Length: 390
Image 1 (cartoon, rainbow, N blue to C red):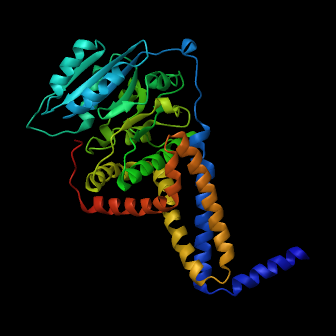
Image 2 (image 1 turned 180 degrees about the vertical axis):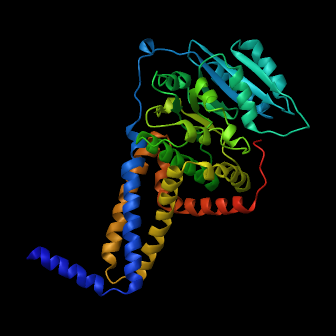
Image 3 (image 1 turned 120 degrees about the vertical axis):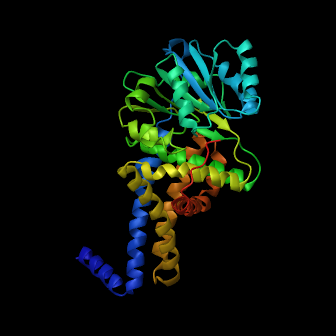
């Protein structure tokens, strides 16, 4: 009898609501469920798959080719390349592809070869007949590689320590073809730097969490490893060679699966870069990166769209219900429960990514990101011009 009374009261409550409130409540509950699902099913796993410290003496080592594409990167190469060439690892080479640089890149590389015999240089000469992007330079570097396992990073990246290569390499097992690493940005003063680092950490939480749950869909070229044979089996970047971006995320989206993908989340395996200094520069960078989104698999696009849209609908319906809903306390309790879950996940994951303080601003910035992405996608639809990679 008490159960029947509860059902009766619920039906009476629903019947007493306006149509607008009923629709808003339905949207709110559905969006709330979707958000709970993503944070429990995917995002929390970006931490629980974290690797442990290992014994170097017992660690098997595979020969590795590190590939770096550089265009007008003389300053960064002089500053960062020694840290890569001095990795605590017995068998590796570093191939830097000098892609038509007009600064002192060639001179810097030649000087470094005198000190570091592991360094090899590949050149892309200027050809007025056609233009190309990073993918050609990267392809040439991969063809020049001597080893099966490739570790990719950028000229403006510096490893967290001398065990970066060793930690990434320990995932090179016979059943793995891809290793996803974290490429973060250095902490600096200012709101823009805070937003960039949050967006980067949030994106990492997404792709690490989904990969840990058996749904890998992207990686970042600042810290990514895969087999040379996988590259050629996939015919390189042939399916998206017309895009200036996609050498990392689209390649992973095409080739990664639940069984062949590993994650490396030890802080010593991270790479760090300097973030953009102006909003315009970051806007152009993100706009270029998001041109790859329409090429993702249908399942990936559905998951990402569902998560982003549910976030926006949740906020809109929450505001509407807090204004017009007769029982605001229920809405508020449900919303606060979700915020608590998010705060816990952000705290754990962001701390694991060495971005711990960012979780304090998560309730605000995470609501802005979908709006920013939506604007970028609309901008890309109206702008068909392809940008340069450098």
